[in-house]
Length: 270
Image (cartoon, rainbow, N blue to C red; front, side, top):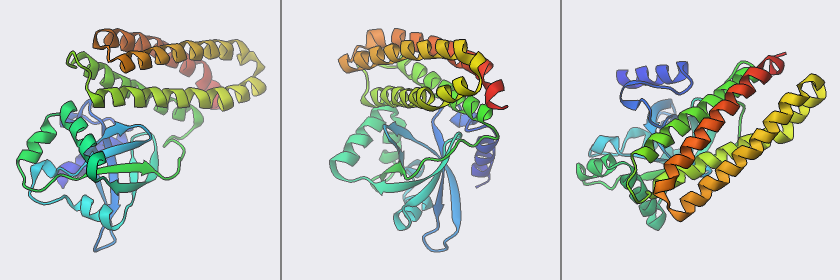
């Protein structure tokens, strides 16, 4: 419990960044409602990206009993998720049948430690999908801080993907493909939101920003081309090309994010 408390405090103080055994990993804080007490309980958990949802495994390190948070969400499936940028309500679904088995196989292929946990216990480790119920604003004090928070989350996720690609086998794993495609989907959504909302509003309010926004528009088009190329590489299962594609995307995206922050944050926070 003391260890969990330290992780939770560090997570909240550093917008989702945690050191120690969780450094460089994907982590959320899951808050459930006690099945018997009705009290709220928060646990740090590793997760798997899965498109519009995330997936957690009730491994409890291979313990003989399901963890308390699992019993809580079975009784009260509406939970709260903190990912370092957003805090949102989600619906928990315990997966069964082929869907459960497919996700379990993906998890074990990506991280054999899950199989080691299963080998330690006779219970079948549950697989749970968490689907966001409604979006919410970033956990930030200003629009500029929100932009930086979202950008830093993309930086961390792409750094994780880059490491996973560099360490991958000649045949691309299913979960690695999902990780890449989920990140691409998130970037497309973010840029579409900027193109349709933030950029037009800045053009209207600050005419002097027109050259800057024009450049950002061009960079969005270029990044869309890189994302599409990465998608085609994943579709072909071309492990030899993937690392170069990811490196090019990360390099151009980092330059884009830095320029956007330098140019827009002073105006966003006016």
